[in-house]
Image 1: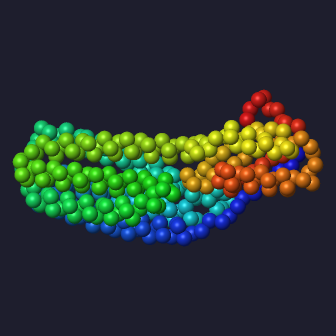
Image 2: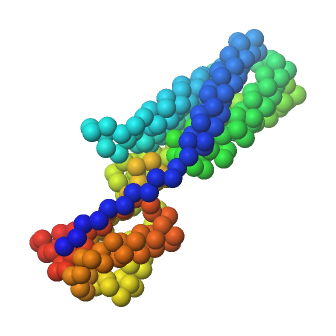
Image 3: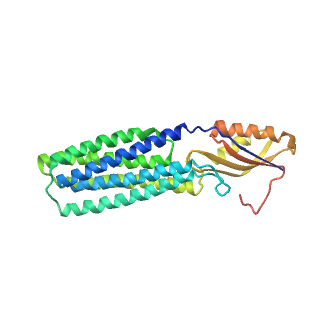
Length: 303
């Protein structure tokens, strides 16, 4: 029996540094938008703007959580946290998704109230402030777009910003129609639409976060395909006890038992290199623990 492990380190901190700077700038910008919308909501007597400002304030809080999580994730491993702290980002994403669910519920409740208690609104002020909010949210969304593809944590924050952007669009449409036609009923209707969007997005993020926290197999990985590819080597009899998981939605880890046709331990390193090259090139797995066996272990049929 041979036990082999390889963990490749080649990650640069350049992406993390740039991502953190963008996230920090986004926090400052979003807080500014929050203040402008809150004041504009009071001046125009628009509950929609005030609600949107509170929505932005919640987003700012979530972004601060995301930023803090990214900083924590870069801490070095310790004897008590051997995987490091990268999973802090996933915890932050889960927390953000729960906040999103609460926001959706809040919007539904407020929209229901406004249907039965409409109030006079200054459409001109409402429109001006909503346009300012839209421009700020669009800029923030563009700033975080690429980072959201690489980090689930930033993705959840990006969803916050997209929901803000969509909300601003609806507020602008409502402001135009309210100013020109007095259609106040559109305000709660648009609020409900935004709530539905946030609801579906938050559920998606929460499901993905829980899947990672439960060490589920990454969605782009097929265990059966990995087994078949490894078993194509002429020195491999079969593969079992195969597990693949991720700590942060990016780095993948693999462990498995590989039964060999021979028991020549002198070739173990060569065998390991071939298998790891396969894992890296075809499946982008750079962290692997592989145990070689001559006779397959049988423990009550459990894997």
